[in-house]
Length: 376
Ligand code: G3P
Ligand code: CA
Image 1 (cartoon, rainbow, N blue to C red):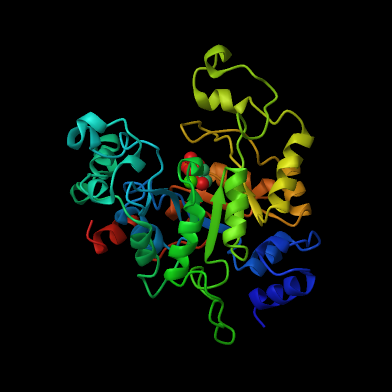
Image 2: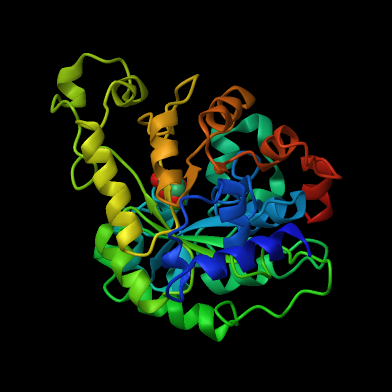
């Protein structure tokens, strides 16, 4: 019996109720726990796709992550004015599209104030060429925003490697009912159906097993709603320090802190005490999460360097509660090593190719070869 099947059998014996939330198995080691949920361990989570090498959340980025061999395609889910689910990280379209040129009078409006037809007129690729000239490609010009349906098509599009989907309800307070809409779409596309039994001795690909979808959110209320809508789908509660999240040990604002940048400011903020952190773990567990998604402080700073919520005691406490740890968002080997040494179970990365190398699962082809093969 493959390890995956053994762990699944063990977990099924330990669970007292059905559903992903019932992983009350602190005695299982994290590898066995991940295997039992059908989640790769350690997991390679392609943050907005392979977004270091191609414009985030576009077909170039997601097809590259898929073909490199990422376990999951990560996305931030929003809903258009006419009710279509699509992927975009920011609330506004300004940073990653030409909305200021196409819709100058509405450039500051939230993306959700645009219909899908309007969103599809936008160029979500050219900004990348301007921001990163050393990684620019002419074919990135004009890349469109993608719907969830289109990202599902990409996830299913390479018979040699089928990644799973790692879907965040982004600012869910703006989108009442998005958890229900998401369930309907995943169900319609067959991503919530029980997976087909694997052939003897063959572990399912990440996008085929029972861990093929992971749902993630920063919002407690959205976690509760996701659990209500999709009780059998693995869920991760994302962790943050600040208003509406883990209470910090200092209330000094960035402006008053004297720190030179946000990364330095965040690095000095911590949960106000251990009990505060543990309360968030307890909430996650009690509301169906199979793990947490903490932030990390990056060695070289930058705009994705946040609070250090992957201290070894934090990861151990999470494991002791029978949950996994998927840290966001790391791109450099020095940070991959620190995080793995601290005990995390998977990493969100903008650099899928680098993380796969670090895990000694290098892609067969280079980033450039795959981009060219995919028409970029
Ligand atoms: O979803 C995990 C990670 O992506 C959280 O950060 O802001 O990039 O969505 P953000
Ligand atoms: Ca995200």
